[in-house]
Length: 165
Image (cartoon, rainbow, N blue to C red; front, side, top):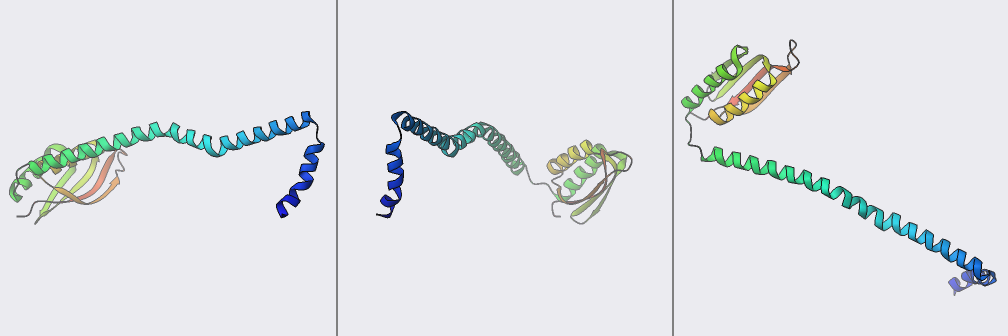
């Protein structure tokens, strides 16, 4: 009853409008309704659809990276086990070849510490990958800072774990 009482003045005003004014009010209400429908329901859904393709490409790239890492892990697992001495020899050779005179190797037990001086970043990245695969050396600690002499080079120490003796 309260709603009917509240709407009574509006209904009376509506009836007092001419057919032309009623048509204009209906058109305005329809326009407002369509705009509201667009802003609330359609526009957000279209925005999501526009972003979906880019998100799919990003997820596909991540999936390819995961697949690549899985293949690398399986390849490393299938390699024969390497003893401590063989791993140490491979690591020593890789330090001399990959890092040159700017690196020193110190081995204590199953831990190898490599001290770097002005080592180029790309050479370090390649050497780390080579040490992981060829010497089965796993990086455990890294204390690196950019070289004062060359901002594209590193100074510091790396601690690697070797296979047990």
